[in-house]
Amino acid sequence: MVTDLSGWAVTAVAVLGVCSVACGIAVFVVDSMARATFALLASFLAVAGVLLVLDLVYLAVVTALMMTIEMAIMAVFMIMFMMNPAGLMPMTMVHNARGSAVAGAGVFGVLVGGIWTIDWPVRRGAVPVDATRQLGEAIMGSHMLVMLVTGVGLFATILAGTVLATARGRYDRFGADLTGAKPDDPIPGGLPR
Amino acid sequence: MSGDVGLQILLTVAAGLVGVGLFGALSQQSIVMVMMGLELVLNGVLLAAGAAWYFIAPDLPDGQMLAVMALVVMAVEMAMGFAVTVAIYRARQVDMVDAARDLRG
Image (cartoon, rainbow over all chains, first blue to last red; front, side, top):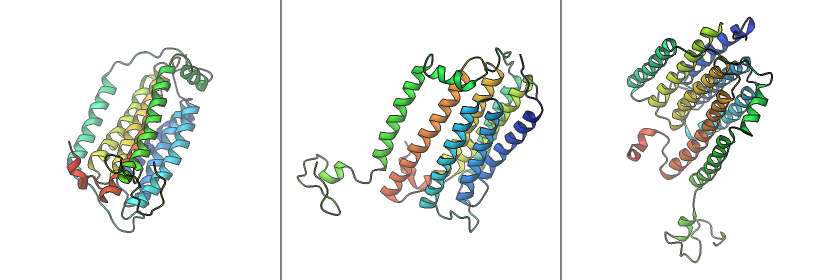
């Protein structure tokens, strides 16, 4: 049973691990919202690289692709809603920074204390030849309930997100009791119920 | 990196991500920046799940399933976060959490 990462893998994990945390810190240090977004993307890509080294090829690729698209969307939202998206002037938008730093450092300390004092179980089994196949068989077999619940949750998210983001719903158009004969639209001509 | 400390080192990196993300989520005033802090926390969970799978029980898919769940939670958090951001901005032109203080329960 091989439990070691050796050679280039150790170097890659070390570099990528440091990069992920450094880029995570950069998210809250840089002035520009756009730079913060891409620093977060860099942190995700570094973690995807670590997953790649750990033979989790599918999860690494999914993480990289999903987060790249997600951060691109987030950059658009930054420019839409936030002031100073390009970082043309110094910017600090924080509250209770000291308390937050204490909370973050405290949680980190507790986690590290637990990580280095727990007697971790001995590794069982070996890395499968195809980890993606192992995941796929679990999703379609022993862990199908997890994916069913996940699917329902994602569907509910789609519905809730659409409802929240809709500018004017039926109650705006037809009144609180939905008895309006004609829709009250800013620009007439909307379809009736 | 031996298997004995490899798990601890990667979990320490994950704890660093969780700590930094928690700091960001608690300290930032911008709603989108709060979401970025939460994403960093989930990034740490993702890394920890992958490390746990590799160093503890690679013959079981549970670690991978946990990583998949972390990815799903990330997607849900981003979608709902953006929807809430759009809704609150549309309703009262608010993009800072301090300006929505009256929503606190």
